Image (cartoon, rainbow, N blue to C red; front, side):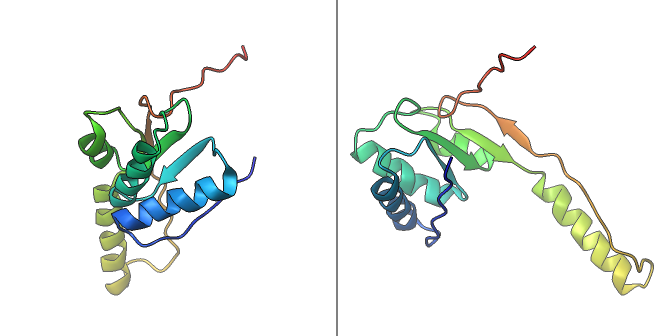
Length: 130
């Protein structure tokens, strides 16, 4: 399947514009991913104004669980991906501190587990494999 990436400004108009461009290019894409809550608002505005149904016409996935739930809890739950940003920030600052103190001189690698929370906007597909 084709993946289309559309770069837009991080505002509601940018999200709306991304949806316009995506639907113009792809007729009916199977789904959209919003990288920020404000872009999600613009995409959802486009979907609403064009009487599209979620997930029947288009599935929606957003980044950031709390934001997605707060924005659209009254209309439908949004499937979202979230990362432990506070822990990642803390670890980053800790690594910088250790580097500045010359307490570590090798490359640092941290792996963080993301959380995928399914909502009505993109339901979980159950595997048929056993």
